[in-house]
Amino acid sequence: MSGVLPSQQIAQMIASNQIAGTRSVSTAQIQPASLDLRLGRTAWRVRASFLAGSGARVSDRLREFEMHRVDLTDGAVLEKGCVYVVPLMESLALPDNVQAVANAKSSTGRLDLLTRTITDGGTEFDRIAPGYHGPLYAEICPRSFSVLVRPGMRLNQIRFRDTQAVLGDDSLRALHAQTPLVDGEAVIDDGLGFSVDLRLPDTTLVGYHAKPHTGVIDLDNINHYTASEYWEEVHSDNGKIILDPGAFYILVSREAVTIPPDYAAEMAPFLAMVGEFRVHYAGFFDPGFGYAEAGGAGSRGVLEVRCHEAPFVLEHGQVVGRLIYEKMAAQPEQLYGADLASNYQGQGLKLSKHFKTPG
Image (tube, rainbow, N blue to C red; front, side, top):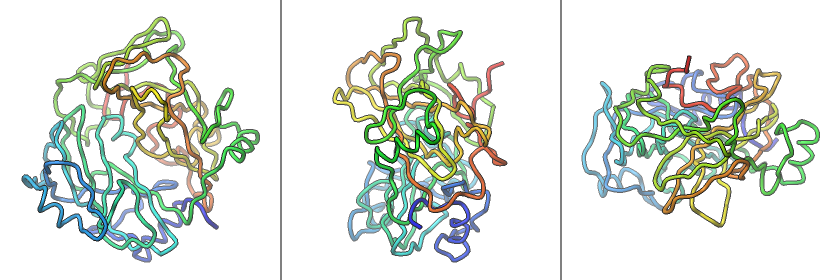
């Protein structure tokens, strides 16, 4: 059956060496519809972001762009505003009928840590062609905070599919009629639209704005950092905020989102003509996210928003993104939030797991 491959099929790919690692691939890396990828031991500081290009290897292009190498063995800081390439521990030997797509993990995106996957012969970020045999690399550019990383850290993840199984709008409407995908009216147009919530109940707090000059964040430190040292609170009493050019914001969707067990979803930017801001799309929505039976009723989408050249007024209820739903090839044996350490099930407005929970 075509569709996104579930956890049990990812485990079979590992067993058959279609997915291999310089260290054994752990079952702890397997998510309901994706696999976490691990950093290797060396980072290359490069002059600019690049793709290998058709017929070329990343290792050859590194010689062209390399500035210096950083040994990650005992931990090392990746500095804000710099671009690094890190070989990943995982490599692929995909069958001819299986393609892959990668994305940053949720916590990575919430730190404004641009992380993309590149491959030998690759002409696109995060897209891996059917039948690819070769290594994987992470391009990492910390944009708001410098971060301390070590080998084995998992900043991005990969999803496998046996042919495309994206739901068209008619199928999406039928699914919403059967299992409500949002808690209000569904705006369906090239995917399921979602809007920003700037009128949260019983508070004027609507988001967070990354401070420009902060300390380093050690990505192994969970529930550790005081939010006020890294973020400024964003308040609104009229359902509007003005986005500053170049600034990074954490906001939240107005809609509570549901991903039924037989489906997965990916966040995509809303293709607005204004072009003054964009919603970063970090990570996938796994089967079971927001699903009541998996403990997720009321899960909202966290929005990672960056403003471009001019200040921009963002208003409550404005459509800012969309979810693209895909059929699973089979239902995963475990759902997001159900017997898994799922950090963001049932979430509202929430910073990454590295920051202390208020109160």
